[in-house]
Length: 227
Image 1 (cartoon, rainbow, N blue to C red):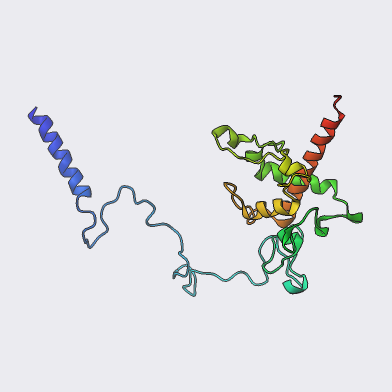
Image 2: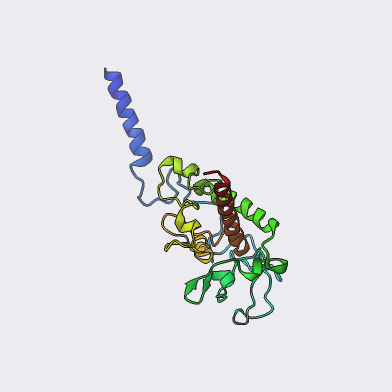
């Protein structure tokens, strides 16, 4: 029994010796087992760095480069410039293409910027929407858009079913137009987060075009069934 007591006492001395004086002033860093990433091999914003000749941690972009997905606009945003195909929107461009709004209302239909010859939506554009939908949307809304994605199996409720009247029936007083859906993808709504920073403007419209294709296909299948 005496040896057990001595073992406990010895362990207590070790623990106090290692951790009991944390927070006191030392000339050397205290002993650490887990540093909780307090010290990392990184350069903090606007801090000095001996790695660079000018000792500045913050670096200027390489001359002549632009962010991925952007084109250098040839006109100001007020003149209609700043729209890049398959790119992100530019601040100040309040067109239907970039906002989903026409005046004070959500617009309906695909904007001219995503239409092909004759104003038609191409099969390639819808196919791209299918790919983007499966990457970013299907996990919640399901691959068919019925709101029964993987997340629904874990108890998350109120996931939009795109075959519900408010999404598929224009006569419904709560109908969600294309512009309204574009705004939701851009800024999020309810439990759905914003995808404006990760899905380009063209791809947002492509996703909506694909959803409308799913709805049209389901409606045609239902109409073809004998009563």
